[in-house]
Length: 77
Image (cartoon, rainbow, N blue to C red):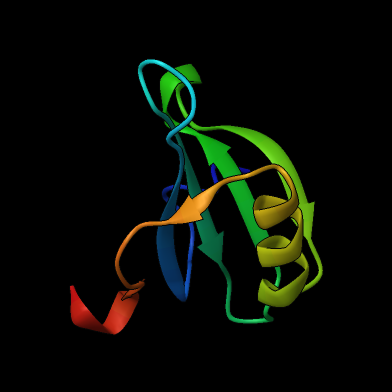
């Protein structure tokens, strides 16, 4: 399954600013509320799958990632 090209509900970027250069992860949420963290550097390979945005947020914050401003929904594109 190509998560980047398939149906998604929202996307958000998270950054680990403590690394040099800063490390980005793309978080995609689907219509069912499942979230996927993808690595843009490795052609969007799946890093981790989460049952909800809240689970993803907890994991990312524990790993010291910070959300970049806002989320982009598919309806805005």
